[in-house]
Image: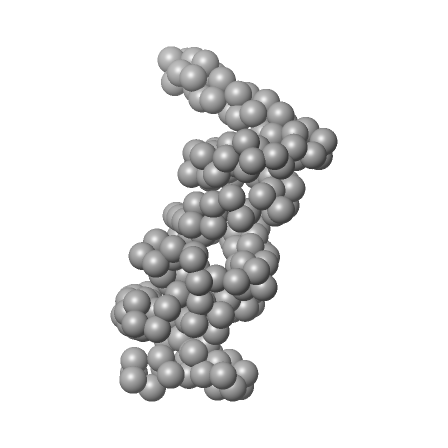
Length: 210
């Protein structure tokens, strides 16, 4: 199966890639432990041989695929590639596609697991100071989730901040200090304070009352 599917996923022909995605999605419906793990590992090995940009450029648009299971597989692949190889060979156009794709995949997830969180954090940290033009979008995503009614969504936002805080701080230090970004960061810290205050002072009381 891998021999058939893998070339389709990275083929230059659009319809071949669509066919590959459909095969993966259908396999996932019938078997939770589909060949996706092997496909991820094999694609990562390909990237190790030909370079991160060569492979990521072929799959980055799939971060917006309509099938969430497939989006997760693509995010996991990109996370592992950039975790291994970094972002040195990723040009500006691919950088924009990456940020746009991870924001979409992160916002559109319906199950709060670690795949999207890990991928988002890895991409941002690999790009480093290069994410500074995208801070408003990233901060906006974090703010919305910090102010969400769901405790799980707020927790995920807090986890994302912990993974990207160093990069955000670095971007501020190199001069990205627009009024909008400052205001967003202030709000993030405010909601983060509220979040951890509730964890420490409200939850223990609830447990005692129980």
